[in-house]
Image (tube, rainbow, N blue to C red; front, side, top):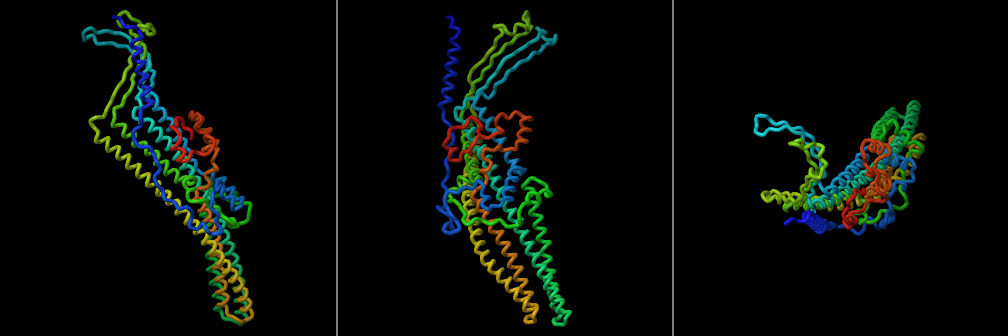
Amino acid sequence: MNMPKNTCWGRWRGFWLLSLLLVACCAKVGPNYSRPGIEMNENWLEANNHRLRTGPGEYRAWWQVFKDPILDRIIETAYRENLNLRVAAVRVLEARAQLGAVVGQLYPQTQQATGSVENVRESKRVPASANFSEASLGVTATWEIDFWGKFRRAVESADASLMASVANYDSMLVTLTGSAASLYVTIRTLERRLIIASHNVETQRRSLEIARYRFEGGTTSRRDVEQARTLLASTEATVPALQIQLRQAEDALSVLLGMPPSLLAEQLQGGEAEIPAPPAQVVVGIPVDLLRWRPDVRAAEYNAMAQCPQIGISKAQLYPALSLLGSFGFQSSTFNSFSLGDIFLGSSRSSSIGPSVTWNIFNYGQLTNLVRVQDARFEELLVTYQNAVLSAQQDVEDNLTGFLRSEEEAGSLQESADAARSSLDLAVIQYREGITDFTTVLTAQQSLLSAEDSLASVLGNISTFLVGVYRAMGGGWEIREGQDFVPVETREVMEKRTNWGGLLTPKSGPPPTPEQQEEKPLIRTPEW
């Protein structure tokens, strides 16, 4: 009995449709990610201080609170030119491309066009030897059906890894802006301390002249002259030490700005060497903001989210893998009376199609242990995320305490410096009139230098701690929103070298948070 020609195709068509239905309905083995429990304070320990204001904070360009245009220019230059930030940006592009490659695993994994032409000459020493040419042309495909969700879990993992790379870039940007601002404050503080040291050197030189004049007049001993010279030399010795620190801070800042030290002077020009002053009131938000604003906290959670699907990928190895194999082509040869030109005749067609099953049934112990390895790594990353949240809270609290206590310290030091200045003026007058000895003048000069230098250092500490507060809150990364991760010139070079499609330009708007990432459907294209 002859079967209709389309009966076989009808059977296989039903098989294909059934397979596609199974792919659509099959489950994913392994756990779905859920955020671990996190302990956070409702507010900061210093929240009641009048210098602080809690509530929703905006940290996009926090450095502008110092109202220093030179600092604004330095931050902008660091964002454009820092080389380590460019490395992090290229890693984002790498993760985008990796996600695209992983998404491709959802479709037939092998899709090949094949073709060959060969001449066969058999030995005349064997029976029925023959000489002929053979040609073939066709396509082959292999599709392992994602019955257990192995490839979809891989997409979830690559998707979270991409978001982790974006968060790492943002974290480096937060660190960069904080470090650049801190170094700028350090430079201005050292410049102020050098000015103070220079002023004290001039004052002590005048005191030395007075002591020498009185010694030459016979009204005092040589000891006063030597004491004045000792104090002057000691103060002059502080200048080279401060200059060393200043040069080191300038060199460090030039590296952050991606330029040689010789060009840094242009960046620092345009204003007086004043230590940036904090605003009258500081907005610090609330602790829960850290989960949203701190990129390193987001990165820690994304790393855990990327690891969670690896458990399912490993578990899928415990079950049978179902694949569909197929090929279609044409074959012809010159054997007997055939011709290579007959390759496109209907009788030259060849095809094969069918399912294939593989199952690792003899190494279950090894595969089970690999699942345990992935689960242990996931638990490790969960704990790492929880620790990152705690460390972020500590970071904010430490800098808030440093900021507020330094302001209190500055108030006392200002009173001390004012008193030391008045004391020195009186001591010099009394010494000239012979009412007191030079030891009183010497002590007053030492007290003034110490008080003024300490005050300058503490004023720098106040601004440095405030920079630390904003950095600890995760502020600064928002300046890259809507911007390409790599500079225009780098993008143009990469586009000429490789076809990147649209991966070099980000979507508009901020990336999704881990909560949004957990709620949204499976990403099928590398959006970020």
